[in-house]
Length: 142
Image (cartoon, rainbow, N blue to C red; front, side, top):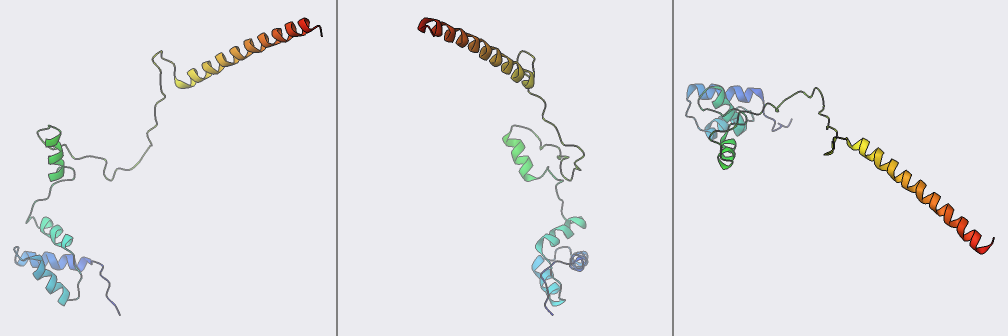
């Protein structure tokens, strides 16, 4: 039977128990003891256990070191408030508003009026071409 390297909840409990006994126990010591017991643990579990037990502080999402650096680079005094977009349920998809030109018409109306103009010009050109054909036919005596 082979062991997988998957972290187990027992490992997290083991880490929490060890940190309750001695909060300053380094990860390497806890990892060695966990390996003896056949538990697989990862450093992220160690950090999460320290946060859970209140031994270290963790910044809320969107207010950490990177957010503070970005805010300072943008000239803001404090980091921005946490973004509410994480784990947000998608209720509706946003729709793109219709493009409106400077004269107040939307793009569909503009396209339709452009098509009408083109058809009018085509009809005028067709009528002119008909008259030219008649004149050529008269001149050639056909």
